[in-house]
Each structure stands twice: as C-alpha cells, then as structure tokens.
Image 1: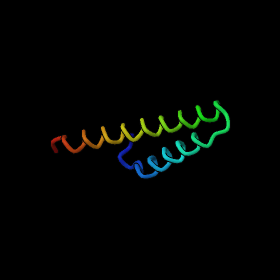
Image 2: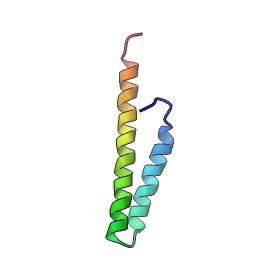
Image 3: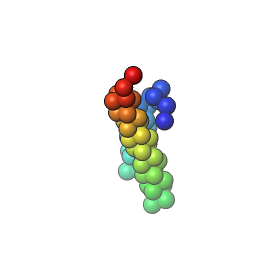
Length: 59
C-alpha cells in the first residue's frame, strides 16, 4: 500500500459501509456492505503496518 493513501478516506468509507450494512433491507445487502467494511479495515491495517515499518527503518 502506498504511503500516500488517505487513511481518513479509508476510515470514512469503512464507517459508511458499516452504517449501510445496518440499514440494509436484505441479508445479501448487509453482507455486501460488511465485506466492504472489512476490506477497508484491511487496507487501514496494511497502511498502519507500512507506516510502522517505515518509522523503524534506519535511514
């Protein structure tokens, strides 16, 4: 993942997906939005791992 990724955007999309999952009228819709939220969570976690790695890498 690129360090230029806007983590606030990813967090916003995750929250919106969770809200839409709660409001979904069907199990399929709920599942789809929950999967999107998990995908955004995974991207945020990858971003955090990359930043930790970059912070502790000697220059």
